[in-house]
Length: 293
Image 1 (tube, rainbow, N blue to C red):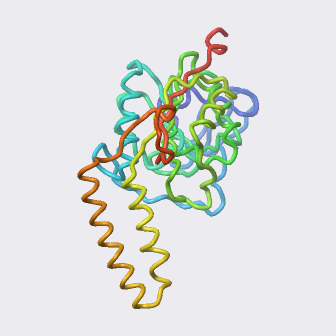
Image 2: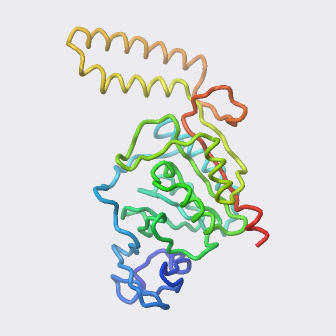
C-alpha cells in the first residue's frame, strides 16, 4: 500500500535520474520503475533533497483575510482573487508551503504542498533548485507566497518552474521589497518590479499582472520597532527614557494620520509615484512559445 497520502502526487512525480514513474515498495521508500532508485519516505513524505544545514521549523502563525500583518492580509486578498480564476479541475503546486498559511485559499483545488523542510502540512520535501522530481507540464498553477526572496538562484528556479506549467498555466507570486530580514540566514534578495519583469522574460513567461502594495504607516511602524528593539537599549538611561517617550508620542500622531489617510493600497508600480513599495504581487503565464509547442 502506498505511503504517499496525496493521490495527486504519485501521478506527477518523475525520477530526477531517468524520468521514470514511482511506486511504493515499503512504507518507508518509493522506488523508480525505470532505474530502481529509491527515495526515502518520512511520515509519508518523499524526501528528494536533504534539509538545508541549520534550518529549523518556522513558527506556525495564524493567517487569514483579517489576520497577520497588513502585507500578509494583502497577500491573502491577491491570492484569493488569482485562484478564483482557475478551473475547478486545476492542480496547484504550493511551492514553499511551510505550515500551509494559504491552504484555506488553495483548498478548493487539488494541491501539492512542497517545502525544503518536512513540515507536517506538506506533501513532498525537495529543493527544486537542486533537483526536479516532477513531470513537465504537471501543474495549472504554481504558487510562491513570500518564497522567491529565499531562493539563492532565482533565475534558474523560474525556468524550472516554467517547465512544470501546462501551456496555459500560471505562476502566482508574492514577494516583499521593503520588509525586514526574516528566516535568516536564508533571506537572499529583494526584487524591484523591473527585475521581476526581466526574470519572467528570461524564463519565457508572460507577466500578465503586477501590483505593488504601498503602506506608508507600515513603513513607519517597522522603523519605530527597529528603534525600540536595537537603538534604544544601547542608549544611556535618561536618553533612552526620553527617546522612548518621544517615539511613543510620534507613534500616536502617526496613528491619527492613518485614520485620515487610510491604510495600505494597491497600485500598478508603473503608474505609482511612490518609490516605497512594501512588496509586489505578480501573475506570470506560460509564454506564447510554450503555448505554440
